[in-house]
Length: 169
Image: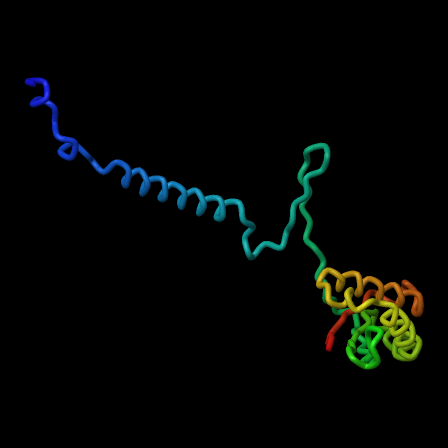
């Protein structure tokens, strides 16, 4: 029985609160590591230079060209309105496009507008309603419209197609 009296009661032990302190230290270290990773690894906002590693281990830096250039013209085409689906006039698509071209070729694009509109409409009529409802479809739509513009105008005149307005109802 003497042994039982020497034991300390369960609640009166030396608890130093090490569990909470360890949690605080881990949180501070994690926050510092996150800040350091973002600060040192993220590119600076003022630098427009990108780096590419070549297969032989060298790093090559380049500055990307701006998408909007001074020597480009943007020729807006008329709105295109087509019905979509099998039911008569239940759903429709309204799309407005612009052709990217050199400033010298803007008149040629304006002159070919009826042919461009016809090429775009024939493609848009072949698209299923489920395609229009998918967000992943829109890059393919721009690509296909660009191909048709290149067929009508030639690859040296058309620099791409911009979809400036799109409405599915």
